[in-house]
Figure 1 (cartoon, rainbow, N blue to C red):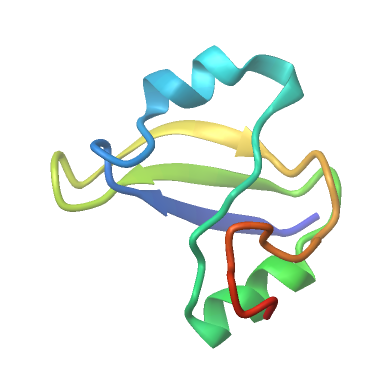
Figure 2 (cartoon, rainbow, N blue to C red):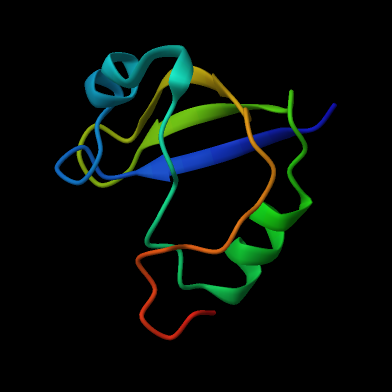
Length: 80
C-alpha cells in the first residue's frame, strides 16, 4: 500500500465537501501537471493519502482512500 498527498485549496474543494461526498467519493479533476498525472496513474484502490489544505490553513485536515483506479479527467477539453 502506498501513501499519497492530496492537495486542495479550501475555496476549490474543502475537507468539509470531501466528508459530505461520503464513501461514494468524488472525482479528482483539474490536474494538468504531467508529474501529478503520473502519480494519479500509479495509485491503486486501497491506497491512502493525506488531504492537505494548501494556501489557506496549510495543514493536513484528513485522511482519504483511493476507491477507483485512474481514469481520464472528463473536464479536460484536450482529452489528455
